[in-house]
Image (tube, rainbow, N blue to C red; front, side):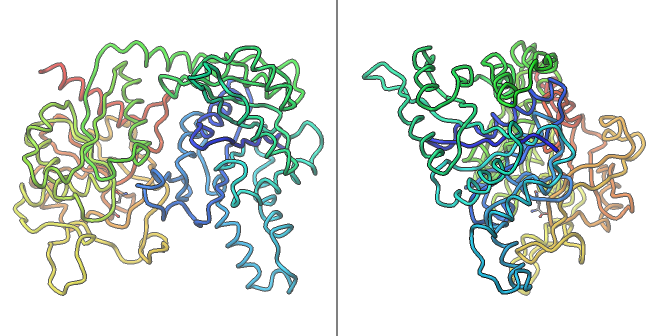
Length: 538
Ligand code: GLN
């Protein structure tokens, strides 16, 4: 049975709980333990897949086809452990399970209550896969005191109580605000948030305190005394230049030691942090620099393309290159010539997206990359736009478009080179068919894709409703657009590439989801290598 680490937050949100959990997972791995990370979200949405990227950041897709919170992306990037459907749950999902069981008569007419029915559902969830790892790290979204969070805290309280001593540890993240007028960091909000935990029967074993000024020893002692934890278990967390410094920084601050100590594991196995030292060395000592334009729709929110931003950084790590990514709203290219914007860049990336808005601009960006021989990586919608561009401007199908952009009108606006196959994938809440999760693809011999991957068969994660229609394959290949990756049955195009272009690749899947700092995704590594070549030419 795994040991459990619960991670809660207090004072304010956005303190980096997800990152701290992920870094702790990485540190436990460095000491030889196996880990799994989980996220419990108190909001009432049933699945994060239906939430707007504008509001909630990107949807992270797992191999087994779950659309989850972006924190699972952090978990994977730091630990390399592939997340599963069961690693993310929301209060909405918990309630839905309970209510559906009630509707089926599963409770035999008894009164359904938060305690015990909802809390039992949460505890059952916590136990899933407990035999598989040494440590299960469970993060609770939001901050202590949120109304929606209560059933989760109560379930955790019971769970800890029901297990043997030293089998569960609670780690609480807080903020020490700096009050300039007093010239001091204040510990009171931390004390209050620990009190809030205590009032619902939970006591933190380890406190992680975010601060933007050094925490004096005296304040550490004060926190320890008032919050009932030992001084060594009050861990300072300062702002970092790169998120990938978190494992080393937390190790130096004593986090993993404090956690193992709280479990009574002494002496703790020594950590091997070579991998993280190498990542930091590469990030801090780049030998080159490239600028990448990311032409997309959800450009106002940093988190909307979180995994893409990270995968670009990983591509930089692979090449010892600093990558500066600039986000450009594709709608601009519907009013303005893209040339003055895009000329300044060494490569162009068009990411995934849904809906018609901004797509003509993405098509123009793809055209610019093709005509100016600039490296282009089109992901999902970005691949579909590259195919439409090829059909319209190279193969002469001037009305080429996607079925996704047809309105309800009787008259078709487009010739559907991108279409929705009947019956593929699982039904989603919006009533469409979504192809979501990991699917294999066969790579064509001698193609750039096969060369980059160094493999004939790959597996990548998908999340889309539409596909390139293979009825256009012959025409497009005749004009030089090679279909270099196909689903094993040969029906669904997975990768396209221009034959006479130094680096122009469109992929129907989302490679960024599998990239890690210590194992950069081959497509991103090679994309940055190609960008570096452009940078050296000018
Ligand atoms: N909107 C497109 C589709 O559903 C692309 C989706 C995506 O980019 N993830 O096929």
